[in-house]
Length: 252
Image 1 (cartoon, helix red, strand yellow):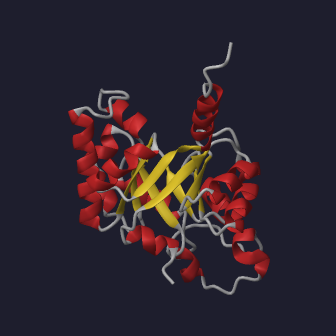
Image 2: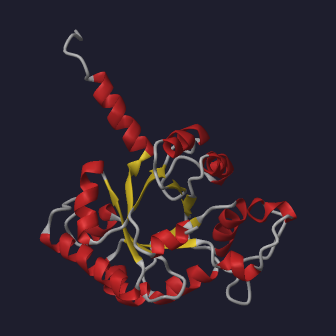
C-alpha cells in the first residue's frame, strides 16, 4: 500500500486545509469532509500545542494524516510535535539551504539528525513501537515554505536539500515580498510560482500552495502544484456562515 508520503512525493494531487481554530471537533468535521490531509497551524492559528493531540486523534479516527506548521524551526518545537505523532512538519520563514538543512535535521534521530530519542511517547505507541529509528526517520513529511524574496532566490538549492518533500508557497507573504501584496494575478507573482514549480520538478519533490477557494485548485494543479491547501477551517466556516446569513430575501 502506498504511504501518504509516497503519494505526495510521487506527485499525486492531494487536497488539505489548514486548522486554525484549535478545535478537535472542527478537525473531525474537516476529516469527515474528504480532505486528504489536515495541517494544524501553530504559527498563526488560535490553538497551541496543548490542543494538538485532540486534533491528531480526530484525524486518526478517520485515517486522515495531520501535519503541523510549527511556530519556529527550533529543535524542541519540532521534536515535541513529532513525539505527539504528527505526520509531518511545515517550516515557515526559512530562507537559505543552510537553514533548511538544520531544520530538517530536527526531524531525524541520530546519527542522521538531532531529534531527541524517546520511545515512551504517543508517536512511538508509548513504548510499544518496534520500528527502527531509521524507519521512523523516513516517515515524516517535510514541507518548507517559500514566502520571502531570499527563499525564492535560493529555491533551487533549497529544493535539492536531502529530506525535503514539498516546497510550499505562502501566497500572502510571497506576494508582499515581491512588492505586489495580494495581487495573485500579477505577472511577477505568477513568474515566481513557475520558478518554484520548476525547482520542485528539478529536485523531484512536490510543489504545494495555499489557495483561497476550491475554484482556484484546478488552475494551480495545471500550473504544476500537487500538494494544495484549500483555505482553512475558520475561512471555510466564515464563508459558509456568511452565505447562510444572506440566504433569504425575506429578512427585514
